[in-house]
Image (tube, rainbow, N blue to C red; front, top):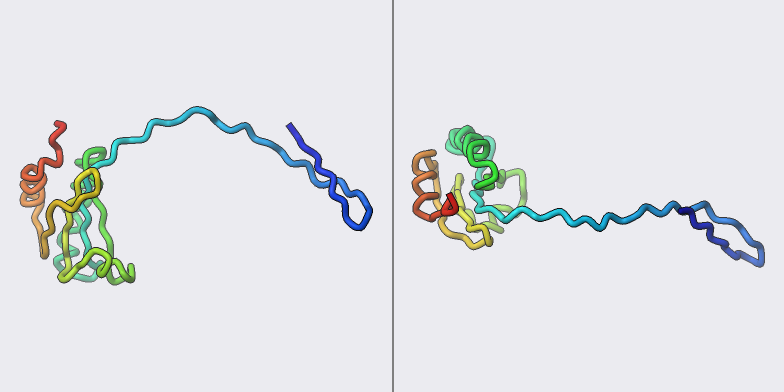
Length: 127
């Protein structure tokens, strides 16, 4: 459907450009349930942070749809360290699916220790 608008300017009438109306979809897509999160705060040039990178990538792929894994470079993202209260890098913060901080670790964290902490915190309790 096209709508033409008439614009009056100094007693002259001008036809405006046609406005094309696009129908709005009434279908609502169901939102995915929020997932627990593991946020790793570090820096690309920090040695322990570099050691954690492949662990985080593996966790991200292995637990896709069960755990959101996020890396934030505090040297590139000004204010992130302060926002998250980081004292040492790397710092890992575990959040529940409702956003509540459950646990915080400072320093290198092995995959085995991360998974043990996930079990302890019951992050995958729906399995």
